[in-house]
Image (tube, rainbow, N blue to C red; front, side, top):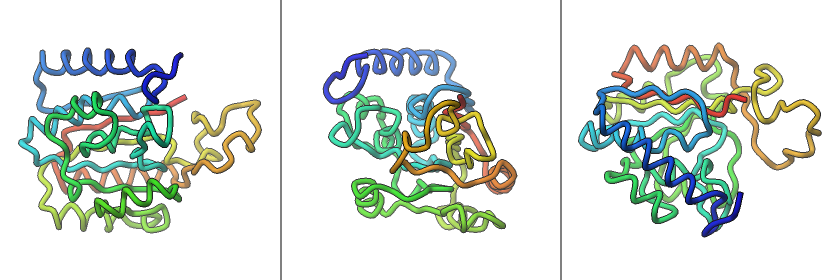
Length: 218
């Protein structure tokens, strides 16, 4: 796969993005579930849902990583999708987001240590975050955020790499035969399945979940 304008296989990804949006527009659903693929698969569905709910969509990003990279920082678009949904990044991926999500309507759950460029992005847009430790025994940080913003419609992005690879093995970080040094410097998830299930269950009892994407299963 070739590097195109700073992104690996950019043209193919943009073509897939366009086809996904065409399919969604054909059916115009009130709710969307997305299973499989990397994090980029949620770009078209979440962009659509924010339009469908008149810019009032809240997004809970359950992920070890913030996914706000740009082609200046990284070559793979799956690490850029949250930035795209907020209206930043590669021009053509951003053009797929006709109505960017409000920064106040975004919260991370299970986020691990971030790179300097990611930290600067999060601080600049004042994006909310609850780390693993804050969610070990309670979903309260997320529930408080939903109440504060008056959320009515929520889309949940669940990147399975938010899970501890020592406990959940169907992850890139648990790939057999690959030495741990291969992933040195890359944040790995610390949550358990039980914690994630509790979080999603608590959230679903507090707000109307209209979107759910489960990504990065290997």
